[in-house]
Length: 155
Image (tube, rainbow, N blue to C red; front, side, top):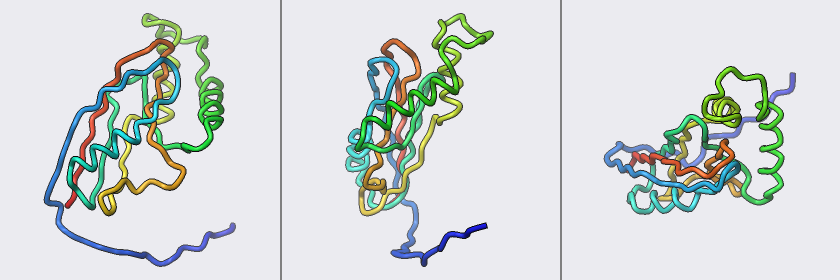
């Protein structure tokens, strides 16, 4: 078994959690696919006035989800949707179908991805990597209005 090299902890700081902020974000989706919400989350962080802490992003739906993914090449999103189509095909032999053929696969896709994210705040900014963006993933075919809850804690 190969083992990776673990470096030293750098830029360690500590302090008390003294402030918090929360908000709701409404997102209109065009139907199935990725909607970049990074800018809206970053704006919330700025409005919160927090320098260091965490922000949580929570999707209040069972047929849409959140993910952190590459934000440079849109082919990544195309390939991810293709992979989800393979894992949870639109017209599978599902029992639940009263809301349409895209509903049960949407629930499976949400289970495979996630309904919530936690992102560190460092120096008043999201501590995302260079090529990372925060996305709402719509798993239903038609447009929807999705509600995202944002909460930040820190100092």
